[in-house]
Length: 241
Ligand SMILES: Nc1ncnc2c1ncn2[C@@H]1O[C@H](COP(=O)(O)OP(=O)(O)OP(=O)(O)O)[C@@H](O)[C@H]1O
Image (cartoon, rainbow, N blue to C red; front, side):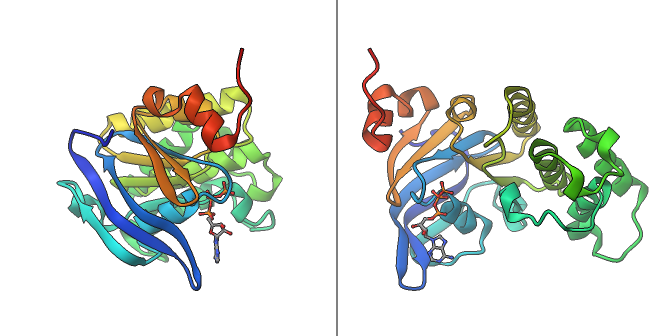
């Protein structure tokens, strides 16, 4: 069931993909405002492609994207990529990485304001990585690096926060802490969308989109969408007894 409250973005009959490869097909769905949405589906179902469409970096072949009442806030969405997409050898500390999140506000080579420094510190604090601030990104564990990338996203203070698999591969404590930060961020008025294979995290979201082969096969509250029947059908999960 589509989200009933105010929406941040509505996709109507969206078809999109890559040269000579259509991925999303006739997708109609809405992203509720100031809430968390999980985009789930098997490998290759189009989750990352949908995030790129929402980020405005992948054009539509057909269909429309409509901004809701929060449209003006989403002029500059924030997109946190998968941590595997970030090189291990980037010579950056955690603080420098998170500080890059402020570029959109102050431009790249300008001096940091007191507010910039405070947002950077607060973002690291919320992700529990203040003690790692001066460590190089390349020396961190996967979970620590993931927290640094999420902190960089928070520091952007965008109204639309898009994340590609922020909790995949993390231990339960790290996963729970990122999930809690995302819920609190939505509680503060930000629209959060995460593509995820993590069904535990998806079940804690307010809204859920289930994709298969680039098509929407379920939308609504996670308990309505991620049923045993849907999991069996979409992922070929075995029957539970
Ligand atoms: N740059 C690209 N050029 C061509 N095809 C691509 C490109 N990126 C992705 N695809 C194809 O688009 C389809 C959907 O990919 P996408 O990454 O959106 O899926 P996903 O659901 O995020 O997958 P995963 O769970 O594996 O991350 C796949 O078949 C993939 O091969």
